[in-house]
Amino acid sequence: MSKQRHRKPKTEYQKQRQQHRAQSNRHVVTFEAQLSPEDHDEILRINRTVAYIGRRVTAEARKRLQQLRRRNDYQYLVSQYGIIKKKQETDPSACLEQERKQIASQMDSIQEEVGLTFAHLRHIGANYAQLGS
Image (cartoon, rainbow, N blue to C red; front, side, top):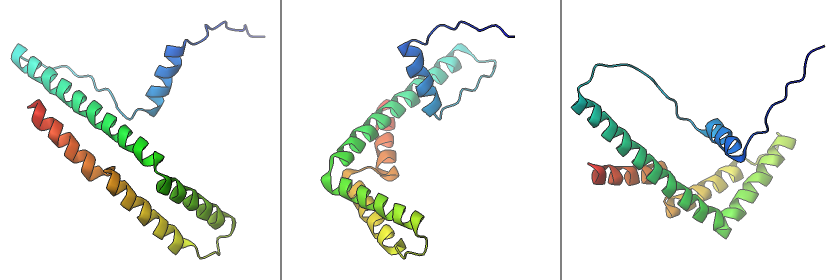
């Protein structure tokens, strides 16, 4: 018979931190190097700049995604896309591929209008990079 462990309940901060780490795609790399103080400061400056740009681009993407989700036409297309996808799963012989592609292209055009594409976000990141240098 094994003993029961008494674990402390997780705090709200620990739960949020665990959730953030599960969703994060960033990895930490540790290494040693012989650097002069100037090189060390330069690396830290670059690190701060990259982190700043990442935060700004992420914030802008979230803002634009919220704008996109509030649009009625986009909400309608998402619901129609889901309906067609479920129909395809239940009846694979149904010829709904063309409809699904048409809805997907309409969704892409709305994303383009809102400015929520990789090209737009890369452009925003490049603008912040120019400001940082």
